[in-house]
Length: 81
Image 1 (cartoon, rainbow, N blue to C red):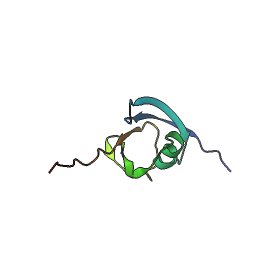
Image 2 (cartoon, one colour):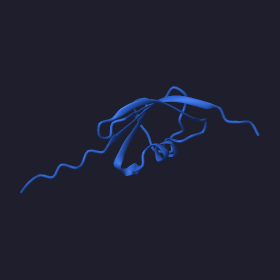
Image 3 (cartoon, one colour):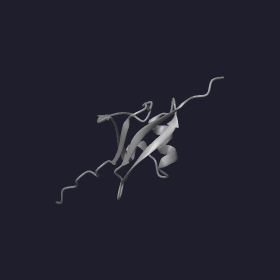
Image 4 (cartoon, rainbow, N blue to C red):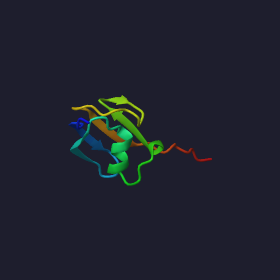
């Protein structure tokens, strides 16, 4: 069975103070599987995922050179009475 090769991409986490890092995963890794390992409180409903500036689902396969940005969903504004 051939070994899957590694691919690199840029990960930008805009949660809290935020950070950016170069990451390396095996070919065939989805955004969801990467984020479950990277973020302890991962819940796809709490974040917007963008890959190369396009909003995607967490089932998106990562590709070498991708730019993955995770942003918290802004809470809905509640108008006062």
